[in-house]
Image (cartoon, rainbow, N blue to C red):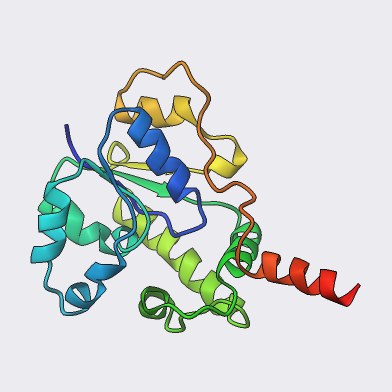
Length: 192
C-alpha cells in the first residue's frame, strides 16, 4: 500500500480526511508538533522514522513537507483538503484566536490568526497554488477535495482505487465548539 499524505492546512477537513482514511483501512498519523525543531534544521531522519510506522498522514507538519515526502516516497498519493478562504479564516480564528503556537509561527510568520487574517489567507492561498503547480503534470498523484462542499467517498475512493464503504462519510469537528467562539459566548452570558 502506497502512502497517502493529507497536505491541506488545518481547518480544511484534515481530521475528517484522517477518519475517512482509517475507515478505508489506513493507519493514520495525525499532527506531530514534536517534529518541528528537527524539520526547521532540515533534519528529516526523525520524520522518516515516524512515517515508517504509518500509511497515511494528516494535519501539521505534513502539508509543509509535501515536496520532501514526494521525493522520499515515490508513488505516494497526496490529498489537498481545502475550503472557501472566507469560511476557512473564520474557522481558524474561531478555533485558534490569539493562542500562539510555534508551528503556526513557522508556517505563517505569526503564531496566532486573530488580527493577522490577511497574512494567514495569503499563506493559505499560496500553499494551494504551490501544491497545484507542483503536481500539475501528475494528476494521478494529487486529489483536491473540499469536504465542506460535499466531496466525500466517491471522489476519495476513486482516487485511492478503494471500494466505497457502506457507511456515511465522516465529518469530524464540524461546528466544533472551541477557541474564540466559545470565549465570546461565555463573555456574552456574563454581560447579559
